[in-house]
Length: 456
Image 1 (tube, rainbow, N blue to C red):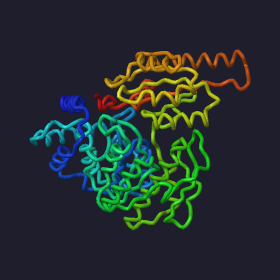
Image 2: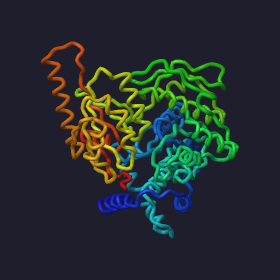
Image 3: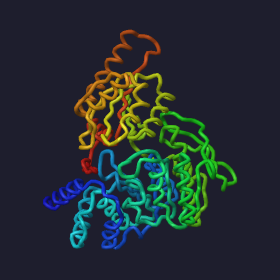
């Protein structure tokens, strides 16, 4: 048993070296040999640059509130590999991961196909797992892009495109039009498409693709919208307005913090309402309300600890960093923010750092244990060119130690000086999901197969 366990784990680790290879031919062959498990449940498909994880989680929570058995497939994971595949909020077990690895590997070995990438294999695993467990709905998040992403083998009840911005330029293109073209590749003939608010270049591509595919299109602000009532560290309260409904849905609450969650939540509600209507189910205001309120999605403006005060956020591109900055300036301006940040070298480092550095009292650059991570010194050099002083730490563990020391010194100064209104410290960990995931492990969160990420 131990040998088979080690064999399975080593096989999954070995797939990481194949990196990212976009395309559908291989995954179609593999899934066909596995009996096309993706055809055994209804699905919602979500693409986009930012917000697709939050939207996926909210849609899954709403469908679950209606009594459905809902599978949720997302990536990457923060702490445990098992986060990637959940059913009604429960992670796949480690034992099931091992069993499915052995089964799927055996099928792939019998095929005359190139070794799959890690994400291709994991996608196949999720679909087989969902079929085996008899889910009603699968909420499937795109890994990268859309058109050639290996999740794009499903024919969903609805497709969703969250906000599109610049990311993964080496794979998706260096213009919004090109990137939007890849994201819009999930739009299937006649399948409704729900879109977040977009820049005009991206919106034009989505409209054009929807027309070409004869797909009903629902655009944020044109067809539905949200009105923000309250926003704080605990989440947002908002009204949902849909021009297909006779009256607004007032006072909805989601525990996902940040003003940007207004659009994400509204998009999720619209997507859920579309698929419910297609399945002859009414838009029940109270069920929608309870589904949104029950949403759980980690690593997005999340308070991890109160003493010391630690926040984690997976901002890994300029658009996400800007939204995080806006939230901090609006709600946490009375804190001395100690920034602990590690960024992947292939990201827009300047675009991520520029919104965050001016609002931080201290900056500590570090590096998660992944090959694509930018060196702390390279980040510090950029900060210096922009006029900011900083510290570096070779590991996240060392960065956290320094941050806690600084936080303690701030608290000591407050105690000694005794000045009313002196700012308390807040440790902010961000820059990458890899960074915050590793930090959570160091801070004591239990991990299962945490290193099973796409290391390039």
